[in-house]
Length: 244
Image (cartoon, rainbow, N blue to C red):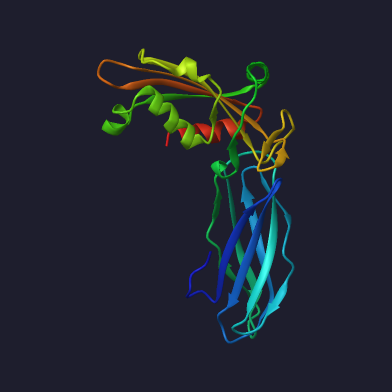
């Protein structure tokens, strides 16, 4: 998060837990002086909130220090964590500040494929008020060489969503394809239909999508993806992933 030439070198390991993000921070005093009252100052953008801040420490010359900060995630959304290192330098009355590089929290880091029944999907589709409709267009020759089924698989891989449409309904090549997709986030604003991931049960935020595409005579794939969720952040973030 800092450079090797900065007075304080900093690197961070990001761990995503069930309800929060843990930042394990390693600091190295690269000067020959003791850095007094050193503190990590973090701030966030998006539905992220710092709930546990590291305490001030004194760091001896050329020594290491490990610190930890906890970030609460209230909704599945793309966010940014930024901050600085602040300390007192001997012989100076002004605080010294080292600006940290930003940590970008990608929504895809905590979205997992999931399944639900057709009735549950329809119920959530009707209930959820946030919808993001994204237009689909072939991008270059590579996309135009894909079949509609291959395009669906590419979209599933990109968004970490599972296809709920039965295999029998996807067979054949009629020039048109429609499929329902579903995923859950590790974090959630309210439990709905719990899903089991890795032996643990999570009640995260639901993400629904409906893909409707067709392939014209020129081989161009067009159509749209409708994304629905309980929170606005999930719908907007997945929409950005679709158009990447």
